[in-house]
Length: 402
Ligand SMILES: [Mn+2]
Image (cartoon, helix red, strand yellow):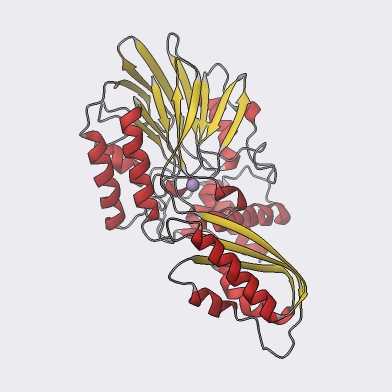
């Protein structure tokens, strides 16, 4: 069978017009023309409580998919997930959809509406004629819980089928900056293919002798240099054990590094101006341009750099991001600070927040095995009432420690 892997749609991400919606729609509709099964490894939505307009966008796309004639059918689901449709559109919840235990998340609503199959912590069998594909899904979990949860679930492949393990998690070998991330070694053995979401750029690796694939997000969110690659989805052929990457029309993202050596303000401005113009001319659609300014410049008599004016000047033909942290001039550092703050993405903020919380608990000497993810959800959502004993102790600990 042909399996499309489409990840991190982030429907409802607001920063770049309707890109998240338009690119999600294009990826899903293109995939429906060429694939027997669509796999969605998490972050279909950008937020755990999307606005009605955003839910409507998602319902619109998935209704369109659901009304198509699918040759492959979902036969059964084992586990706590939900399968109220036989259409082979199989999803798991991601970190952006995560809610406190026992609470509904927006992906669950799509499953309840019979538009996707929610395979979080479940196993789903899809068949087409004699061919069988089994997907074991693990929804996005907090980093400290995932290894333990995997041991508890003990996922096993099904004999006589092509077995896919789908997750939404940070992996230490890909992001080697946090020791709490799971390792490739923690993944269950015996599966034919591993697919993962969460990481927004493409990854191909080998795990347990089999392919481990991440298609990356269908929309730009983090403005990292690695995200300049074209967006799209993976189309995997289970018979040939090979895949291709299918590109979609996505907004261009171009990163340029401009180096200066005692340049005048005029030089800096015109170099930026030229770089932006080049990017605009080479793009079909209004591009997102990120300029890194590096080196040294002199203030002279011309006042500050005026990068805000530059952004305003190009407002109609480019979305500009400037990073001046490597350009030596204190006054401009100040004037640009506000612009840089805008570039911190909500994914980043959540990760940073959890890391701070984890470090603070460690510093204070909190010894119990805490679910930092859940604690973070509670602290960032006052309405959550569920608190277990350890969480309550941790909250007390944090309060007393200050
Ligand atoms: Mn994501």
